[in-house]
Every structure is written in C-alpha cells, then in structure tokens.
Image (cartoon, rainbow over all chains, first blue to last red; front, top):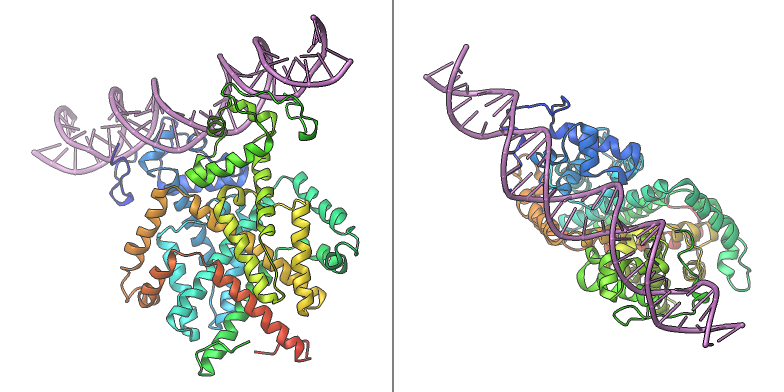
Length: 243
Length: 243
DNA sequence: TTAACAGGTCAACGGTGTTGTCATAAGGTG
DNA sequence: CACCTTATGACAACACCGTTGACCTGTTAA
C-alpha cells in the first residue's frame, strides 16, 4: 500500500462511485467542512465522510494518505477563504489588526475546523501566501528581518491560538456555557473582600468583560508593543530603553 | 449504569484488583500523568491506563463517569502544581512573566489535559486563587481596575491559548512533527525571491525560530505593552499618546 | 457468623483509522 | 470499433477505541 495517492494533476479517469458521485480532492474537503459545521467536529471521521459523499471510506485514501493529510487540506482552505477577503491599505498596524480580526472571525465561523487545524503547518499554497503577505507588511513597516520574523510568529500564533480557544468556548453545549456564566455570577461575585480583596474590588468589571473574547485586547497589546519597538529602532539606538 | 461512580469520601471497601493493586482516584490520576509523560499523549486510553494500573479498564468507571471526567481531574491537579511552585517577588512584570511561563510549561508537559481544560471555567479553589493572585499583582502595580481586568483577561487567555496550541503541536505523532519541519526546510526555504521576496529574505530566521514556541515572545510583547500603558498613566495624562 | 453490597471482571456493542486484495470502467491506441 | 492497461472504487479484515450491562466475590458492619 505504498503509492495509493495520485497527485491531482495526474488524475485522469474520473470514475463515479456506486452511488454516482465523482470524487475529487475539492469535493472531499468541501464535504468535510460542511460535515464539521453541521454536525460538529466529532462528526468528522473517514467513515462518516465516506457515507456523506456516497463512497466507500477506503476510497478517500486515493486522495489523502491519511486523516492528517485531509486535515491539512481543510486548514489551507480556511486560510485561503480568510485571506481572499483581506485588502491591505498600507498602514501596517491597521492592516495587521484587520487581518488578525479576520482570522479570528474566520475561526469563530468554523469553530470545529479551527480547533482541528489551528496548530498545523500546511505548507500549502494559501498558507505560503499568508506568510508572504504578513512578512511583507512588517518589513515594509521598517522592522529588521529577525524582528519581523519574531513578530510575525507571535502574531500568527496568537491569532490561531485565540481562534481555537474561543472556538472551543462557542462549541460547548449550551448547558455547559450557561453553567460557566453561573459560576462567574455566583462564585466569583460573592467572594468576600476579606479573603479575596482584589476579586471583590473588580468583580463588576470581571463580570462585564467575561463574555467577550479577549483577543482584540491581546491583539492591540501586541501591536502596541510592536509600535513601541519600531519607535525605538527609529530613534536610532536599536536597543530597548531600560526600565 | 446510572450510579457507578461513588464519591471518594464514601468509599470504604478497598478491594485489590486481580493483580493486587488497590485503586483510588489519586492513583489513577497519577498513573495517567505518568503515562502521558513517559509514552506521549497518545498513550493515554482507558484500556492502556487499565493495563498500566493492573486492572480491568471498566474498573476505572467506578471512579470517573467518563474520560472527560478523568481529564478534568488531571487538569485540576496540574493547576494546583503550577500555582504551588510560583513565588511572587514583588516585581509585577517579572512575576507575571514567571507565572505565564510556568502555566505554559505545565500545559506542554501534559498536552491532552491542557487542550481539554483550556477553555473551561471551573470555579474551583485553585482557579480562584490564581485569579486573585494575578489581579493583586496588577492592582499593586498601579493599574486602575478596568485596565487591570482587561490585562488580566488577555494574560490568562493568552497563556491558556498558547498552552493549548503548543500542546496540540507536541501531541502530534512523531512522524507528523517531522513532516512539518521538513515542510519548512524544503518548501519555504526554496521559494524563489522573484515570487516570494519576503520569505526568501527572511528564510534563515524563519527556519531558526520555527521550532520554538512563540509564547515567550508573545508574552513579552504583552508585558511591554502593559508597561508602556503604565508609564502613560504615571505621566498623568491617562490617555495613550497619539500615533 | 452472616448478609449486603462496593467494587472488580467479563463480554459485548458499535465505533474508529487503515490496508491488502480484487474488480471494473475509463481512456488511449490501433 | 475493439483491445489493453491501469486508475480508482469497493470489500473485508485488523487492531484499536470508549462504554455498559450482568455477574461474581471479598470486605465490612451488625
């Protein structure tokens, strides 16, 4: 079972399955995404996917070496969709902020897929394009290469990580989410100031902000830090000011 | 199978398994952690855990309703360990940095548990203690309450999100991780400067830093931004400088 | 001493990813 | 149009997974 998978370019004989479907990598990825969105991440299995496609599960191994391969394809498709809707303006901070928010929103729109694919390096077309774009924004802004790479890394991972985290939150069953809100309202708000002075002092703010994602705040912090660094560099020292 | 699990306090008849082991929730959690550490996250399954304990897999269902239950117990143990080893010094930035790194390290040491528990609010003792501590550090540093809460939120979520993200990476099977490294080495490094100038210009740095987690960098960016904000506040304006 | 029952065991169910083998229809060739 | 090659779909099997209903037995309290 060595060379089961044939590169897409070389495919020629489009034979339909028993149920009359003509398979393709695109169709498989699309169906997988639909399956994830409609029935949750747990609904994605080779066997279920085969059933949804009207094909024997083992047929999929003609298109993807293993499940992991399929996951990477799904991830890349998501990156592509996000990137396609992004229009950089030339203001590096604003552009990165916009892209970060879009990535985050994209993850929230496809929670299960985001959780499954957030941590993978796909090396596929869309991902490469994203890397090139982000690095371009940073280098044009004036960051020297090592700095640009470091910020690029932190930026991308932060977007992916928060996307996955917040996705996990929204993917929770209704009951579990309400239970969490309840915990905040009852447990935290009622802690006495004697034993937990800081929670008691800020409980109003804690409850107010607990619902929302902290990604925008975290993103702005990251961009603020980057801006600070850039100003230091422009000031000519090249070294962070002491503190 | 409704009331299989008996609360630990009520347990009385400690009957040894066929192989002579006396089970307990603590022993099970401990063995699970050992299993994860020694043989990777994939090695943790009810059946394998049973084998490692010298007990029938189904015995574990006398202590945990399902695998998720077990994971939460493991996570709780991890929070406890992380907090227990943290000694704040009074330097707010250094203390938060240290705590963030510890949380991240704890997650990496037990990837499966970290991924499962990152997005849950437990309201348990250890979690409450952590919230109180972090808020205390920020308020003593001089952040006004709304600001303290915002930074607290970003800090905690970032630590959890990166913990889960990087955990997912290390939880990958060996082969998949090597495949990722290979992708960087082959695909990215070889992109021609004509089509991908920014990647080509920085490929050396990209490859050098791709292995490591970007969490420390992201954490430092967050702390830098917080420090900047604090200085603005001390300068008396209370408003961020324009840019 | 004995009776109750906590808790360990067994066997089974339905699910999973994956692969070795086979069958067949599509496509190029003459 | 008929033939041959072979790409590709289908089938059956393997080893694993979490979970549960039924059973059995040693421990413990009375």
